Length: 355
Image 1 (cartoon, one colour):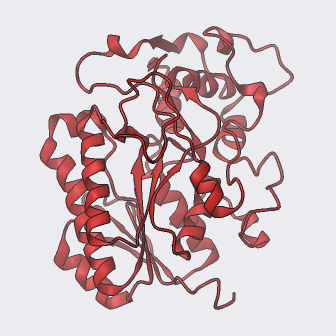
Image 2 (cartoon, one colour; image 1 turned 90 degrees about the horizontal axis):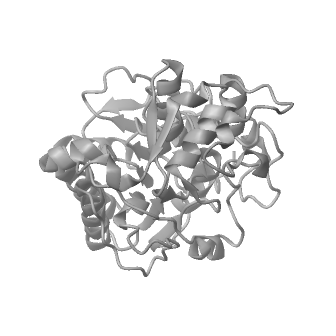
């Protein structure tokens, strides 16, 4: 381990119970034991482990003490509540989790001169234009309290810590801590229990493998890029198509997947439309494309609404097959040689993090 590799350590990861924070923490801690610290909400008592603290990030006093103890050189701020209905019904919770926490973390990063990489969301957009493909310069127009508070969180970070990088992500595709928080895990949790899942034909996202996200997070944590960057995968899929992929590749009953237009979903929470993002600015700054399409193979991209009913293939569709293809592309294909990450990182498994 060279001094260059660890020049941005120790690292603080907030929001470790969410999919991006959980996967980055597990990956980074396996590589750099002893220099990765994480915080979890005080109410999430099931998550325990060395270097994990029960602190709510909006608790400025506790956060100040943590910064004083570790003298963090960089922070991945992955805190945020993406529970759309909860944020809609409890605006105070949304403000506390998505805005107050951003204010505290960004202020402390500025005070302690720590590098800040802040995670935001594609749901700062409404998707009303229908075509998606948003740029960083596109006007934000969120339709949910979640999206509105994510915009406010971005503004707080830019005000308090202008040197910070803000990464707007879409759906992070990988395992979740509790087994049902991530997009894949939630859908699969329904099918495992033989319960239906209703997903929208016209909410379109830019899903991204967490493996690709981890590496970009590391590059940004030890970099000096600032401002807003879109960080979404190159394959655009509707929520219904994502449900088809999970259903078929997991070998689940195809009749459990239901689809509808988002306008039929009811008023709470309101749903965004096509919020796909163009990530060329990120690729230009990195000097290469960090993305694999999700799912990696074109073979597993739905062609129509009945695609998941057709199982006449040589593949043994099963939960294990799903995990190898939808959680991790490195399980099925070598990683691109132009990643700016040491090759020894590639053997780290994201399926059983040691926490």
